[in-house]
Amino acid sequence: MLADTPRNAPPADGLIKDTTTAAFRQDVLSESMKQPVLVDFWAPWCGPCKQLTPVLEKVVREAGGKVKLVKMNIDEHPQIAGQLGVQSIPAVFAFQRGQPVDGFMGALPESQIRAFIERLVGPLGPSAVEEVMAEADRLAAAGDASGAAELYAGILAQDPSHAPALAALAKLHVELGDLEGARRLIDMAPADKARDPAIAGARAALELAEQAGSLGDTAELERRVAANPLDHQARFDLAIALNARGKREEAVDQLLEIVRRDRNWNEDGARKQLVQFFEAWGPMDPATVAGRRRLSSILFA
Image 1 (cartoon, rainbow, N blue to C red):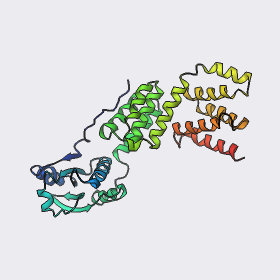
Image 2: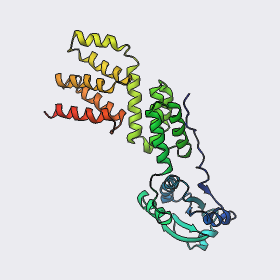
Image 3: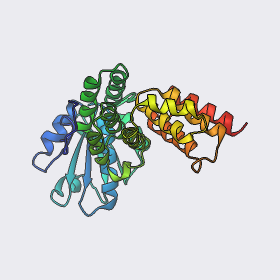
Image 4: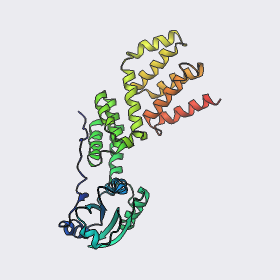
């Protein structure tokens, strides 16, 4: 049984929290003696605040504990914002050693927020999340699905919208035949991540697995192709079945043969199926790179 991701994950390890006027000294001033603390002054009615806060949270999580984020609703707790001279929101102040040392106003893009934090703590480099993702990917490639799933789920516990981890965990479920589990994970992707390449790849992998489930044994399909090399439907089905068994290069061979023989078959169906393969495997997969090159040599010969 693979690890799954919780539906509602708590903030990551105390890196992000809400505060009050009474708790400000402990949450911000005392904590800033250990590492920089960002204070995000916001209000429920503030549209730009709703854009900024998720980006702040994302970068703070990726900083891996080098900085903390404290959020203060100025409608409920206006005193601190007033003392700091906050006249518009969103406003972010950075505290170090008990003192405000930097800040900005407005909903900055992620690149500028990252640069702002790096001024406080130095280059962030690969984030802790990126390092965990790399290790999880290594385990998955080595066949340790359980170990990889546990790491992916850990990332999602901190950031449920992390598209690469969500997609990778869904693909593990696909590979182990748990298509319903894969579908549940893909459906958990937020609307703004629905077209993320990683999520699209997981969705393509799920669709391919569903197609393959109705095709049966490859031996019968191979006999049909050998008996009639122009049976493009049998060759097409064979490619999908081969892919489901991890034989990517052989699957590509079959679809390219259809493209060579009849590009227009099934409304360019073989080429379109190759594109779906490439999407499911990812742009850097060796089978994708080689397959795209071979397809191009046929199309533009």
